[in-house]
Length: 145
Image (tube, rainbow, N blue to C red):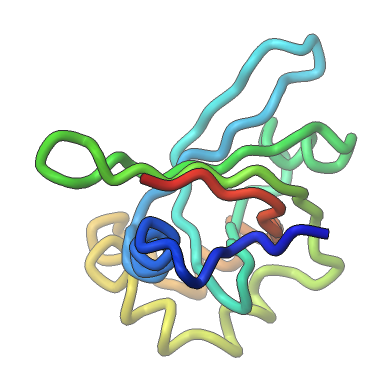
């Protein structure tokens, strides 16, 4: 199996930095009728996986449960939208509620999303209750430039 990350590729190094710091990713999958579906999500990069907390009854959770393909991409950064990261891979629903993961990673999550949480107007514990499903996305292929 070909490794996902090329340590000698500067675009891959930049992509990994973006995964650690960017706030928004686009979660792309298909609806049950096969139509494309793309939604912005908060995500946390940990152990070479993207973790997304979600409300349990969303279309993205339904898509993951039925095994639909998933693609994640970051906002195009750089002065001309030329910092691009597109990840193809597999997603699964964690058997543990997102509150468990958030409790174990609270400090790091708040360091990344503290201002966004304040702007959202809901304490993290309430977010964990509302967004109780944890999606775990494991990249299998990366495109970056």
